[in-house]
Image 1: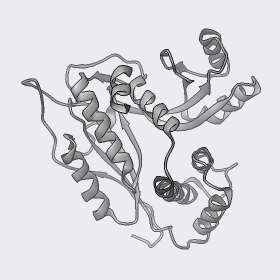
Image 2: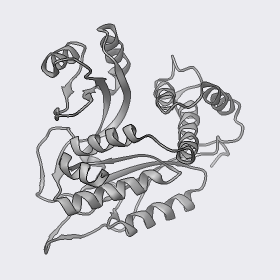
Image 3: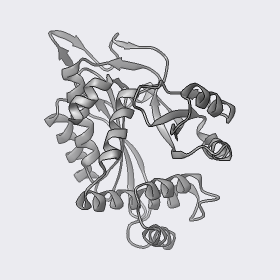
Length: 291
């Protein structure tokens, strides 16, 4: 592999078997239901985490991950101009959302363009299962594949999950544009009509207490829909592409809390960029875990 090459690797591991109160099931169990793409439990958890914020130590690790994402975006997305590189534009927005200083972002882009330190990075995709059989997709960016593989495998094992074979769960997910719009003082029904008028394909189910409305678009239309929403004087708090589940699996309280803990531990790893799941977790379980 060339020194500055980027590789996308799907990591094959041992397929899991899970037991829930004596009933054997897998990630493709009959418990999966529905063809909607809402993931309210996991979304609720991320809203709670953003409200809590991060301490200085975690912020430093977060900036490191975001910097890696920017480097990969420059190398893979077509250069250092965010107007011409959609992937870089999304990476910069995520960095700005995390309050990463613009000077840091600019230096990272220049370093990536120049082929200096930080460009020897590999993109890895791991597939596995959480307790209860929920599918897990992990996206990582690393300068040391062996370290990352060992850390992710150990995290799954220690938290009741298991890595699966390559391709075992990726068919459950599809790439979607995901935009969060601040509800503020808007009536939710009226806001829903506004976002659909702006080009949204679907809107996540609203729960009492939610501060944002989650909107889904075609990945290529994220920027256009974001601009249309902002033209309507609506506040867009997040706009990016994500892997969204086509089917979901309901988890009981014990399994839900175990799955949230596994996701938390995976997201704490330095090399992990994103974790996706098809777990459908009740808000009350999320709040209980967060408390």
